[in-house]
Image 1 (cartoon, rainbow, N blue to C red):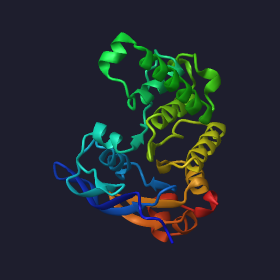
Image 2 (tube, one colour):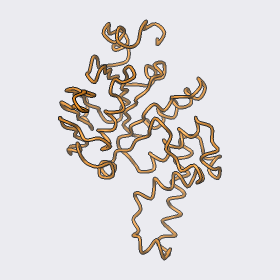
Image 3 (cartoon, helix red, strand yellow):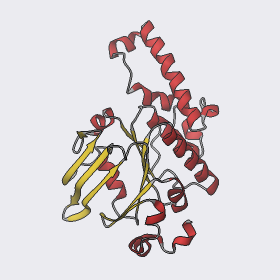
Length: 259
């Protein structure tokens, strides 16, 4: 029997000055699964992620995470519920080290207050050591531990994208949303990204993946949601979705290339 959904999206809509970006979209995500969202450019995929994570307010509908309504909450309050994300365009502190970037993510969960931190009291020093150790663990998880002391801006694009994933993991999310993590990567880097994402799932996270690389999507997803012009046109296991005539017509083309 499937577990209760960790995320429920019901009747979601987003309109911009009369233009509909998302229309009456409903779906669920079960815990411990990878659910990919695919569709043509302009289909509304990033708009959907922005609404789930609080960067955009829905025009209508409801988003329920872990039994609580989060639709309309600001990003910091959504993140506090256990939701983290990455971005299409890498958003790193490029002048800071790789390790420092991940430690920033950990500090959102810091137990010590501003006064203690300013004085750098013994408890703060202990916590800082713990944060550093945890951060190194996240870098190990994405294969970047050896780069910990390098400047983030000096990493190649593939490593920068995985660093952003590590920083998102540092907040301890139950739901991780990845917005095109393979964009701009070569085939070898894409395979590596896929392995890392599968490892994150095995470690217990639930993942929503927005991605254009269909070989990657079809190989690692438990379920695929296909949207076009902001509406759902198909949903189900990869092997079913890639053979859906509506999906082939709207987006995939010949399905054999994704087998």
